[in-house]
Image (cartoon, rainbow over all chains, first blue to last red; front, side, top):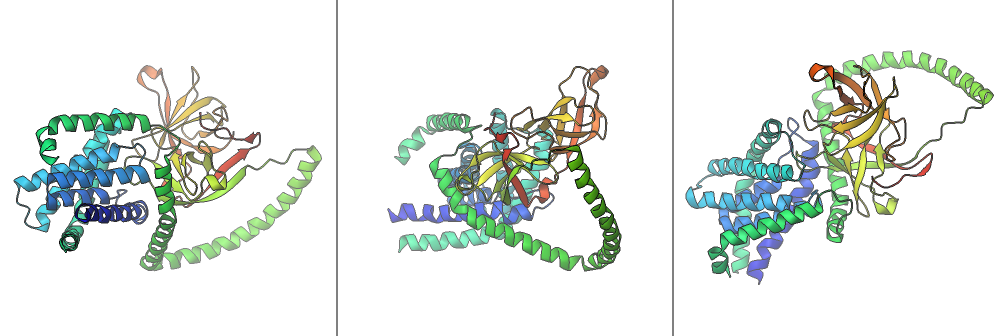
Length: 170
Length: 280
């Protein structure tokens, strides 16, 4: 039971901290009017480290917490984050992610995928933005900002993952 | 269990997608939040307030350090301005006295002030997709969904979701926002809608057959929407698009409020005519 519950409790706390930072610090410190998607970065990197099923599950948890705390529609972030977590896990199974740089590339592609899913689903429910604007002003800048975050976060997440694995095994 | 999931993964994915689509559909456009959402939002609110204030403080300090030369020049200019304003202020005090006497003489009713509740902006929409802010006031302060939110410069938006300690506000620049308004010069009714592109602007749609909309026209609330009290400033028309063959006319509106720098706002609890009604 501990083996199963502990990682998800740790992740839930991490997500709540990430949501706090994203809605406060990163909304004050915008770069060219863009905020990063910290939850998206964590989900994609967990997919890269642990594979598609764990990535998908982490995406469900992270997306659901975003929907509950600051979301407008329940399920929107859940869907996009679950899809990006699963997709980044699939990338890990096909490409050997051996360093931070490659992880950052996966984060860029995963973020574009995540934001695109979000845009399409939001658009289907009447909350969309014009396509060109969405791509140029939202999707690509968010993905680029996520890459910067990932370069710093990947070693940290790898370290936390190792410590968590040791605690679970002990 | 996992083996079963892997065998039927396509079917499972379709079912999950359909369930989520239903959930998104049901929770879209709602004004109330579930108890668990309210609990999580209230739990985060104190830390959100603290972190936002700390971030703004650091930002201001850094800004001050990096722009000391500009500040020194600005200080000298402002000192000159203070002298000028002092003179002007003396003049205005004289006018105020005269005005009070004239008002009394003419029997004008003193303009009734709105019942306002000051609130601090403690968070913003986490994504780059929606335009909303989170305030540190909720049910326990008497905030209800639908209440208008304003600043001294003009209207900000409308309260959408409320928990006991927080409320989220849909800004007038959000594409989902529409406010009943009028052109101050002509009194023609118009609809002010939020724009997705460019962000931070609105579109003015006249509601009369032959509209007289000009660049520089000031737009104020009409009071017809039952949400915003009449006469509150919204913005000015920056550009008028007459459309094909000049048959239609819409305006591009720049709001008076700078939404990227909002720190404190006022929630209008009631207007001259009494309590404001909930959202349309």
